[in-house]
Amino acid sequence: SYAIIENFEQTIADYAGAKYGVAVESCTAALFLCCLYVKPRVVSIPKFTYPGVACSIINAGGKVSFDDRVWKGAYQFMPFDAGVPIIWDSAMRFRKKMFIKDFYCLSFQNKKHLPIGRGGMILCDDLEAVKWFRKARLDGRDYHPSYGNGPITMTGWNMYLTPEQAAKGLMLFERFKDLELPDLENKLQGYPDLSKVEAYKT
Image (tube, helix red, strand yellow):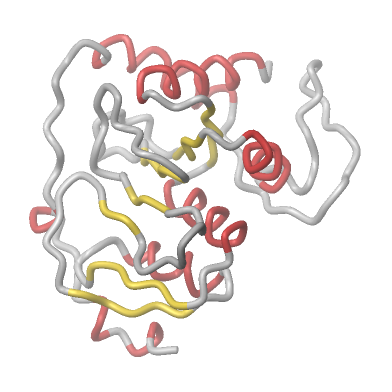
């Protein structure tokens, strides 16, 4: 049932130090939904990162530029105007109290710390944003307590995490919750130089 997804979301949020978690199909989906919600115009990201990060910005209607930041664990989208929530790509960090602020996106891909196989999450403290993210990930609907789907109230996307993935995440979390996990380094991931990709030059 959907209760296990809620359990997984709250378990990870509590561990990270955030009020809420919104589970989705991938970190790329998490970043895409955050970009749709925030609507940044031009975003600068490290040129050595996962290609889906650039795609999430462009597909949400923004433009992407690339910088020479060297990073490990997490980095923020830059620059943002004052008062606009910051989006964080934390695909390679998973540790206690990792949440910083605004919209903090996680990955549960096979090579990450919590290797569900596929999955992601948005951590945040903003209840209104959480309500929008939860509808947006499920075609504009809310989950019904009986695991049926509620009425359609907006356009959305098919980006939800399944109960089976959430159950696996909870099981794996028990192995890692008391460990001090090091940040993963981007230079070890074999990422291409995205600044040279013609498709991203918008």
